Image 1 (cartoon, one colour):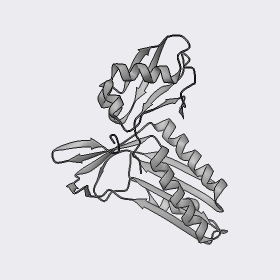
Image 2: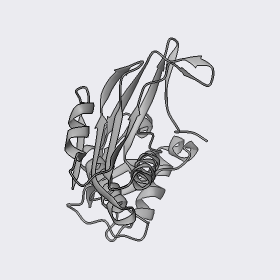
Image 3: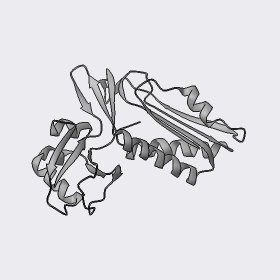
Image 4: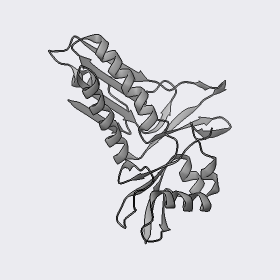
Length: 80
Length: 138
């Protein structure tokens, strides 16, 4: 399954793009995705935190990713 | 009643105040964020704000809903900027009306504090010699 990822803030600089596609095994969870991302982009591990949003909600880790989901990398926020 | 706005053009303080005004209100509390010229002793030239727009709007809505549930407030407006902002410009305005002032102050503080923790908006500080995403690294 190929999932399209939206990427923001410093994560965009690390990945080198504001969107990318990533191949995931069937029944991959958010935690699986985080592990794959950290392996591919080790600088993500140096961030204070990074979260994944699934369909505009913060994910906790166990959620399964489906093919049409909107998935985003959320580095530490700093609005306001 | 809640008004949430994410905008690439300058924020309108009077519009925020007009939205929350109510005959039942005994007061309006407004927080206006401004771009500061220094950070950790270093001169800042400008800030750039980026947002995950759909989620930023839904997270700001959640915070405003929570504020209405939690405090005795009447109306809430939350407006946030995106794009490049110069020193002194306004990245955020929170306006809250309430029957009594204590609730308006408490809700306003709750909204700005929570917004800074949860809303997917990022700010980059631009210096003479480089730029840094705020809060990115420990």
